[in-house]
Amino acid sequence: MSASGMRRVGRRWLLWLPVVATGAVLLALNLWATRSLGRLDLTAQQVYSLSEESLEAARAIRQPITVTWFYDLRNKSMVDALHLLRQYERANPLIQVTGVDPALRPAQARAAGIQFAGSAVLESGDRRTTINGGTETDFTNGLIRISQNGSQTICFTQGHGEATLNSLSSLDDLEDHDHDENLVARVEVHERNGLALARNALRTLGFATVGVNAGSLAQALPHCTVVVVAGPRTPFGSGDVSALRDWTVRGGKSLVLLEPDSAHGLGGLLADFGVAQAAGGITDSGSHYRNDPGSPAVSDYTRHKLTRGLPLSFFPGAAALEPAGESLPPGVAVTPLAQTSPEARLPGREPQRLTLMALATGKAGPEEGAGRPMLLVAGDSDFATNQHFAALGNGTLFVNAVTTLAGADPLLDIRPRHYEQGRVELTNRQMQTVFWTSTVALPALALLIGLMMWWRRR
Image (cartoon, rainbow, N blue to C red; front, side):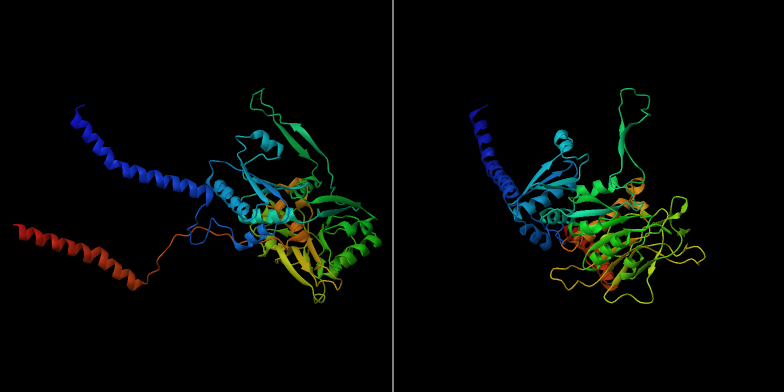
């Protein structure tokens, strides 16, 4: 290349040099801002930012908490959830967040008990809880739950025909391997009428579970956060009934799952909270599970924190709950949580909407520090057993019931925020004006100017 050609190339490079330098500076600033300043949320609803309630919950943490978020690197919503967790980390240095892709680190995921992406494991000291979900509500409530001092104990009564807490489970080989002899498949088989799946779900959330035998309820109640009575079929002894009634009325939290026409001996406890059990089992021709009218199904729940976002649940062989007497006891409020369709009926009665689950609350006791007494009653216990726990929303309904009784007061119900595009609302007259201006007048004006210029150049 000649000297003049070299000079021309040099001049061209000098012309492009400021552009390249400016691009390099902007790229460096972008990388620095991303790593040092985080992301800037310009959405109108602040979709990618924590609410003030979540920030306050994060700042209130007083002990170190490690959060491991198992996510799919190719999933945008899971990547956004990791950025959301980073905001908790920036709000409080005691919160340490790590992101792990189970596909890239299967051993670490297996050690944490994680099989699929979209779960977070929170650890603080010797406490550990797992969250299946990546919303702000999931993360904030997980932080609140694991930061609570002491482990909350869920007591299950035993010895009255209830479902067994420590039910048996075994591993079984799948016989159908699609003609592939090298394929090994094993499934965990649980005793159908036990509560092992419910127990494991509660332990995953950080609760301790314990069975309380008949005759020893009075001694166990001071150590119980919630008492679960899961389908008794023989009466409670007078001592246990008296202890449970007194404990609940003084601020205790009880979850009673009944069965139709069962002799449980807890009518006095139900009456204390304005609830009675109707005779017979429910048949619901309007809304039932599969082809069984004796298994009422519920998809439209009463608006309550406990039932928010629940999928369909069903109650195989359920009793109906009714108000006890002509009026409620003083200070007691009863909220129906799950109801049948209007086509449901009891033996010998006309079709009507019946209550399957109700939450009764009373006034706080006079003792210092006494909480509000709460009794949550369901007309069925089978929905929480191993046979039906994993089906649709049954397991979630049971877990929500226990967590609501155990400490839903400090947990937050954060309103979901969605991305909304900016819109301009116009009246009909304004729309007509825009149409005639943009579609008719302006093109006509442009055409007229073009014709005038053409005429002048002739």
